[in-house]
Length: 336
Image 1 (tube, rainbow, N blue to C red):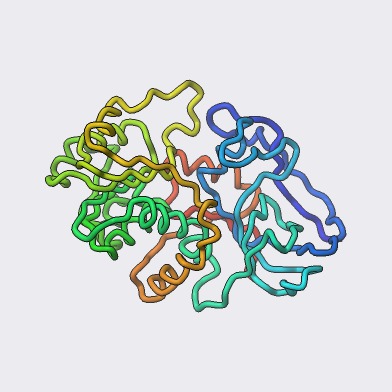
Image 2 (cartoon, rainbow, N blue to C red):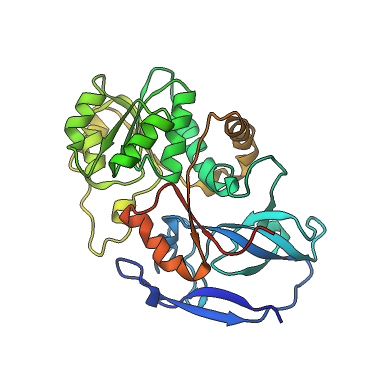
């Protein structure tokens, strides 16, 4: 009998996620119902949003229920299908969860196109990460050639793509990252115009140096002190797409608002939060650009691949400690 191994959420975390918030469960597979598809999970995406899904308070979606498998976006291969749209061997993407096998309705899955790219590209560029970068920058911020774009968490999965798309659109791009190695990667390999190491440099002073004409667009991934420093340099009618606030996801006390909040008024700034789920019905639009850019070498991505489903809780915490190098994914099973 095939055994399914999974992590179930058993308690609401306070602050940093602990392995004790989860339970490792092993069991058999239930028979498929009509319209369902059984998928063997290959690669699991670990994202900052996973931390919010574990909270009791709903945000843009309902929280993960206790004593249920932890949610997570993944790619996998169809093992068995009772849905006409899928057959054994198809590669698919969906909310497969922190487990080795998932049984979902066919409508909850997306069949992956056959392109000459690695399977991991559908988590690094051609999936939810790429959609987040594409629509967050192009739809929310609407960049113009010659504008100055600042990206926080610029060496992360989303930030690194945002900066490259900004360059494709003719922007001057400055990235904020947390190590010298990350800063070198985004400038030397990805083509950012300048970088700021927030751990060893004064962000406000470096923004003055690297953005002498001010900032037109700030792609927000972190919040906190970095947001305050950027607000002080924003140009009139600047735009701030708010993608994430990773600096405060593990906070146990209320986080003070930005001290430079008045700049939103005086500079007539547009500040807009967005969730990639709002754009799923336009995914083909993004794919028509992201796929060619990737295959032409205009978009590069870096993966931090960890091995073994049992390492999921600790690996997720690495996102909040800056210990990952690029898109963090977990290899749950072999590709074939």
